Image 1 (cartoon, rainbow, N blue to C red):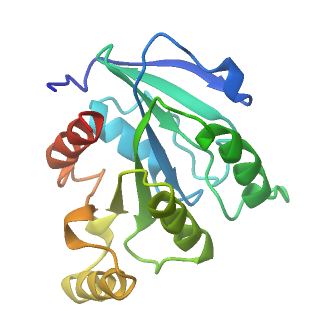
Image 2: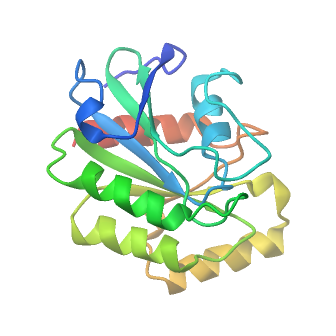
Length: 195
């Protein structure tokens, strides 16, 4: 499937899965900690720095945000899990919303699970990875912010992910800032959509 990622537009945000847009029948969901760089990666993929709202405050995405890409699929930005200012329990919010998202969602073709290159997988990252494997949801583990680490730190995260049993061909190292591996990731998303 050939996709023009620059043909991207925001459709709507929903807190109830029953309110999601229904024009297209394919979805790719973005998952990850609240400060992992999901919005920046979406903007890098579509080459539009203003499409997804980025913030210096983690935890601002509290709904499922639907972006239409080239009239072919929805890119769904899920709420981050983990830390947020203002005492919001993001994990509870995330789990409540995502439970209903994953149940009987035949439109879901795959997931991008984002992790920060400077952090090891935390408990929620592991739970999410195991969930995707258990329910046979194809996914790519996307290591973000690789421009912020040196070679020895990159080796360290590679070793850590290998120890966690993640296959090398399921891992993509990207930089939204420097656009490293963005085109390659676009191809991976297209492959997920063909499953």
